[in-house]
Length: 274
Image 1 (cartoon, rainbow, N blue to C red):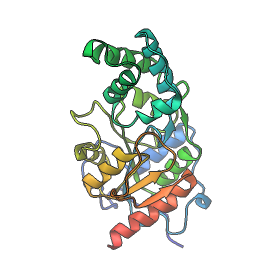
Image 2: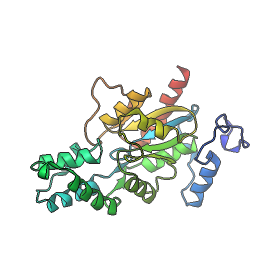
Image 3: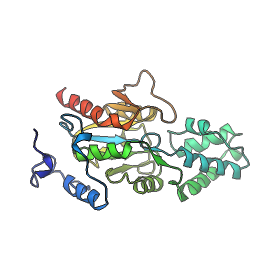
Image 4: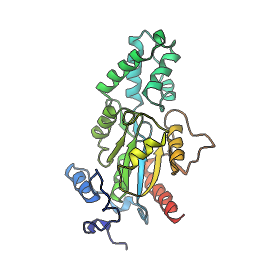
């Protein structure tokens, strides 16, 4: 039986010499226990889980959380204030994935065009409405929190890379008990670019200890981000917006988060062997 890594003395991990703005693995585990999050049972971990440590870069909307109800409510309130008809959940979902500006622009174009040819007033109003309460109506996908806890317990680094502004993104992650175990966060206002620009990936990955990287998301922008960064992409089925085309590599697919830990272990180990 493999010895537990949590008993390793300080400085014994290969990546411990690299300065990092994020706490080491052991302090993160103590912080989770202090917050009342239960330890991970070994029964949740697949055989040889974590033999290759990885930096896991997750999308947020449509991947870890179902945030469409909150975004839809904010979008329809904004549209109503501008004299437009509300849109359906399916329409709003189709416009998600390329950032808030694109979302609001597409909503206005769908309902009659940009007022005066200018998206800025509606964009500012959407930011104000959604930013005031991004959590109500937003839920964690079944099994997602448990999977994140298992991945972190195995030593993988977890970060979120989202097009969403940092205020709402952090509110969601902390309010829904996803941060921790998520430690890194890159948002739509972190840089002057959005996904799939590989600088978004780099910004998120640099917040985690060294290791092979994997991008996990639900749409085309996430798959393109992984391709631009030259790392594997895992697709959560049933998300929002544009889906990956046949010419965009997908290393694996999953429909429930109970499948993710073993899928990560296989992909990360394959990267090390190759």
